[in-house]
Length: 70
Image 1 (tube, rainbow, N blue to C red):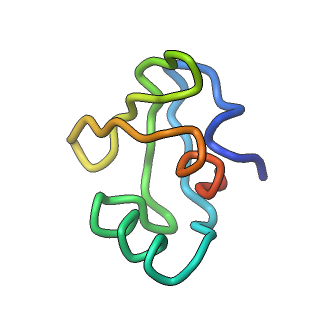
Image 2 (image 1 turned 90 degrees about the horizontal axis):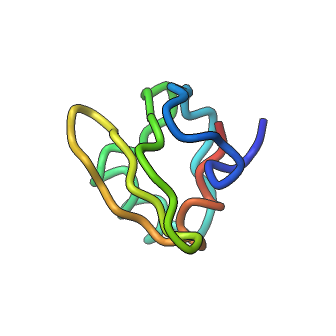
Image 3 (image 1 turned 90 degrees about the vertical axis):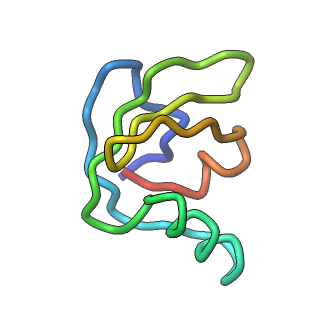
């Protein structure tokens, strides 16, 4: 298990755990980051990431990406 920030662009991964405070987890779940869901990194720019999750592209910061374990 590793944080989303360690994943290479183009690889599809399964979300194993979403960490952080309750409100952070709820925010990420509302964006589609749920345990068992698929996530693909589209690009990384200066630590920030664009990912595909649930047929949507979402931009997240490095701090949020570190809370998503794949």
